[in-house]
Amino acid sequence: VKPPPLEYHSPATIDEALTLLDELDGSIPLAGGQSLIPLLNLRLAHPGHLVDLAGIASLRQVTTENGRLELGAMTTHRVVERTLGAQHPLLTAAASHVGFPAIRARGTIGGSLAHADPAGEIPLVTLVSDAEIGLLSTTGERTVGASGFFVGPYTTARSRGELITRIVFPIPPSAWGFSEFARRTGDYALVACAVSLKINAEGITHAAVGVAGVADRPIRLPAAESALLGSRPDPSTIAGAAEIAATSVEPLADIHGSGEYRRRLVRTLTARALEQASGRAVHV
Ligand SMILES: Cc1cc2nc3c(=O)[nH]c(=O)nc-3n(C[C@H](O)[C@H](O)[C@H](O)COP(=O)(O)OP(=O)(O)OC[C@H]3O[C@@H](n4cnc5c(N)ncnc54)[C@H](O)[C@@H]3O)c2cc1C
Image 1 (cartoon, rainbow, N blue to C red):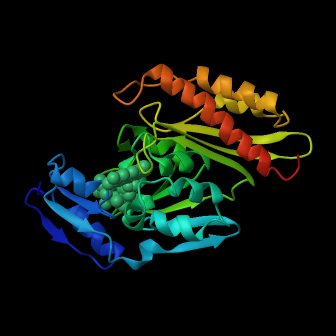
Image 2: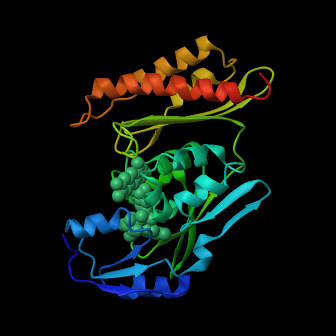
Image 3: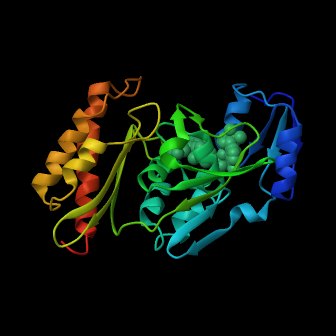
């Protein structure tokens, strides 16, 4: 398997990359190549030009300001996994489930968001964290909330010629949980669940519950979130919310599992993620 004929470009700055993407017909960005190179080799993608982002140092910057974590799009899963546990442990936990160590060493956060696999861990956590995605083109910059970014399978709100430059995560609540089931370590999840809770002495004051692998994009589960709000995170609240999560999804079936099997996974994984979050709550 070999890629179709194409021209390779290696810009040193974002401006150069944007100009190439704007001026060259059939040009697309190359990040870690962990999804794009297989697609090229299988001849499922036919770009005329590859614009490699690897030489643009500013896209690898990681900054924290007022508790908000800002990741350059070329931040690798490995950097997240190894260095950002204190700033965003939910994101770190999710990154550690992406493929194998070699894939995490090259694959990037921006690439995962642009690729938008419906079972991807990074899109899921971006959604549950209410993160914002910065998009830049030759005509200007805009920011899209994660809730509006994923529009279908492998499809996002990003327009041709736009680069994801940064992803901004608000200060994450201290109570979080992440649970996924995959057939083998390193495989994409059949189902993954991420939760993020704020809990005070009275009960849960903020709840974000999301799942991946059950729809054409990662989804939040508002009915389960409503069931959690105002309650204490005890076993009966968790069981109730997990049941609501399972009944509020219409999972897709494929060769790896039926819709009904995935529904059961949603129930189990939501309960596990909520139990983890409850165990991490400071004010219970
Ligand atoms: C064996 C294997 C197992 C894997 N398992 C998992 C898994 O369990 N979970 C998971 O989530 N992923 C998994 N992946 C995919 C991996 O996470 C990739 O890192 C990720 O999907 C894409 O990131 P990348 O940096 O490699 O992007 P690339 O492959 O370089 O690019 C992917 C797409 O994004 C576009 N793109 C990249 N960067 C930008 C940008 N900054 N702005 C705009 N567009 C951009 C490219 O043009 C391309 O269309 C696996 C991959 C392999 C090969």
